[in-house]
Length: 340
Image (cartoon, rainbow, N blue to C red; front, side, top):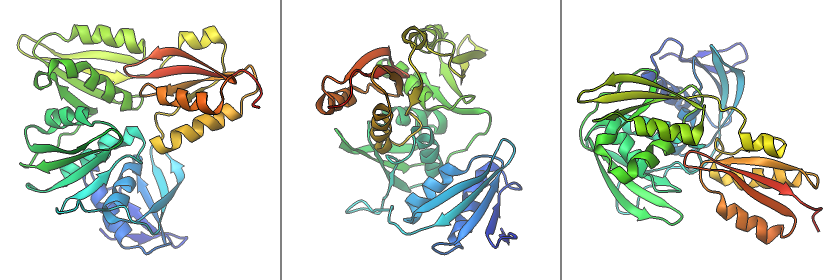
């Protein structure tokens, strides 16, 4: 790929002429050619931010970027290379760490899949996460088949590390479905939690496919109970041996509980890296006037946050659950008096 120079002197990495599966390779090549402090303009028909996260991890340098144009047909992103060190080797092995803790949850699975798909047979990486990535294991097996070894190196409580090795070359499919779960391969107690966990990381409009050996109607009813009208369900195949259903995430209507409280704005922290969430939440709380509140939306029970509020704002806040998972938690957090 020959990278051209724009009128402003920036190197242009034009991905519009390449299929999606080649884009991350072209971005890597283009960014490898620029020096520290130099900008490049990435032009694509989709948001390439997950590739930037992967580049930082694999190349051990930092990137900063700014959107010059943000869809819907074309994205133009100005990327500048900085210094930093993000790539580590596991002591006593040649496996590189892929630390996804700093990534917003919607980009984690995509980044991991791109890393796995780029491996040759026998290669691997050390996955680092802030919770047990077991749902990812089931997803990888469902989408890529029995082509990986999965070995825990560390299992919490704050950090999980897993060796992931590709044992056989895989075919990468394409289509509107972001991922799929073959629940026939997942132990019964883990099925619904794994599916809801992955659904929570989908962006509006994205879909997942469920494969089962019987009608997954109970799962449909579970979705109706938990997420209401925030999904659509379409059967792709209905027996007699295999059932396939496509679940698409939709924009959620304003929760009934929010209208009941007459509360104010929602603060949805799910798209943000975990390290930024508490800061955003406390900034939102500090901006409240006494008697006002907001709705916190999270992808897990924010109970540890409650204890932090109790320690730092005792007697000056209210806390009421509106929704308790498994796909989302909503909590009304209010300021009950001026901070002393």
